Image 1 (tube, rainbow, N blue to C red):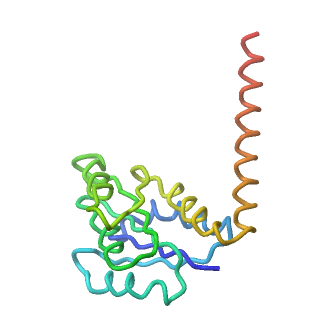
Image 2 (image 1 turned 45 degrees about the horizontal axis):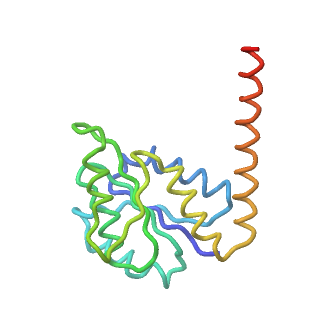
Image 3 (image 1 turned 135 degrees about the horizontal axis):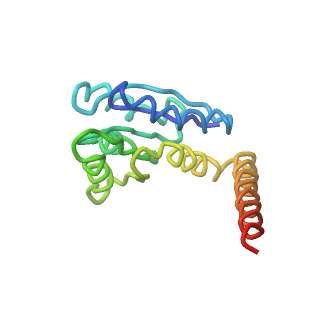
Amino acid sequence: MKKVGLVMGSKSDLPIVEKAINVLKEYEVPFEVHVFSAHRCPVEARDFAMNARENGFGVLIGAAGMAAHLAGALAANTTLPVIGIPCRSSGSDGMDALLSTVMMPPGIPVATVGIDTAKNAALLAVEILSVGDDTLAAKLNEARNKDKEKVLAADKEVSEMYK
C-alpha cells in the first residue's frame, strides 16, 4: 500500500495534524510525518516532494497557517495528489491560510479542506488510495454506514422527544 506523507510547516501545527494521524492509523494506512517550512527550509520541502513517488508515497498532505504556501510548494514539485490543510493562526482566524492554500495557479492543483479539518484531509487521502485498494474502499463504506446509523438513531431519539 502507498504511504501518506504528512508535512507541517511548524511543529505548532502538530495538534491539528494528529487528527489526521489518528484517521490514518484507524484505516491502517502507512504514513510519515515531517516538519518542513516552505519558507525556512524550502530545499528540504522540495526534495521531499520531488522524491515522494519513488519513496512509496501515494498522497501528500501539507498543513500550514498564515501565508500557508506549504501545500502549494509540495504540489509544485510532484504530480502526486496534494491535500492542503489551512491552519488557524492569530490575526485572521485562518482565512489567510485558507485563501493561500485554495488559490493555486492553473496547472498546480491542491485539494483543500476546511480550516483545521485534518480529519477530512486524512479521509480524502484514504479515499484517493482506495481507488486501487478494495480493502480500504470496504473500510470507508463500513465507516459511512456506521455514521448513517448514528444519525438515524439520533433522528429517532429526537423525533420521539417531540411526539
